[in-house]
Picture 1: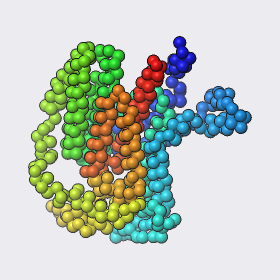
Picture 2: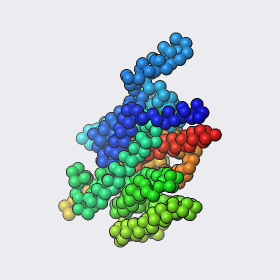
Picture 3: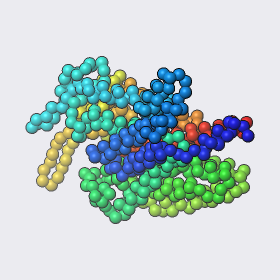
Picture 4: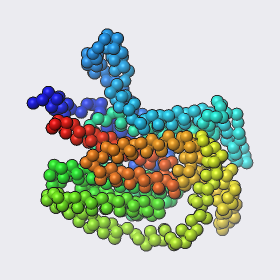
Length: 520
């Protein structure tokens, strides 16, 4: 036996460290909380997400006292080198830090956080209030106008510091996952936490619908009667469940391919299929037009890939029977879901599609998108600042009377005022308006690099990668018509899914490469 093969077998026999289990459990529970954290819009839920993200990051990088002596003994070379190596190991987990520094998404997201921090410390406008209401007044920039700026306002309901907290929560979580996870088992634990929690929320949403609940989770009062699951806004709830569809399909193909490779008769992919179907029913029952459209796109993509997977199974006799059984079960369950969903309610919700398309340029969302783009063009490079939309938008909104004036009629009186927009209902344009081309490029560029990493790590898991890419495309497509990216819970789940899935694919690819080199 070759010495290299001996070292490989010894490394395989090493148990997973307590640190990595802690990172996986912390990250998994934080992602699980996104399904129940009221969308992250309540202050306490946002801070829970922040605590979970920071704790995961700290667990990945913090040194463990029990390993200090080992690190000092294993550091070879000159005395100065040994001393520096021991000092670095005393301050942080060097191997995890190296993994993080080699992660392209880390650098772009870190620069974006600095970008937000500079803007929060550099307000160039402020909110002024009196008995007449509130308005925005310009003020001298605290640092300089050529740097990112913001609007000085309260943390509640929104300001640049609150946006910074939201992005810090998400980025610290994915940094911790990337730096702290080195094994497939722990990475799968994180993804399964997201899937099981999201699937559970889908079931609870259906139960709330059947019981005609008047409060979110039967506990939290909502000013919006069209809530879904734990989300006060059903469009965000349906969008979150579409992410659950993505992780269910991703894990289905991952486990199904592993099952076929090992010629097993069963596996956890059947549970993924069940959760996919339940979640699809929940999305259909939510009556969110965007959620239904993009959920249907995901279902068709999953079904198409499943057919191709079944055709491939023709070359594996045992796997063919398994694939045929799975596809038959999918058709039967899909037909059952089709019967359960209230199609008449969906038809009424969508209305006359042809008329909607003809008047698409004159509806409220299309007009608000144009007004938001007007807002973005005035500060296209750096934007108006994080959390500034609801304060700056009225200046551009008044140029469009159809979305500026509001009329309310009741039996007692008639009231006339201005329509209030908290979000543009188009996250992509709103990102440009708030963060400028520079900030938006940092965020979306980081996500693009992450997807490219997943694609180039798709050795043997092409189906899983394709459904992941389809999920990312539908998320950006949905964000063009709604404000799903402004939900801290959705944003954290979206990034957590992309990073954990990419990590799993890279670990799987590295394992295959290791086996090939061992056989050679």
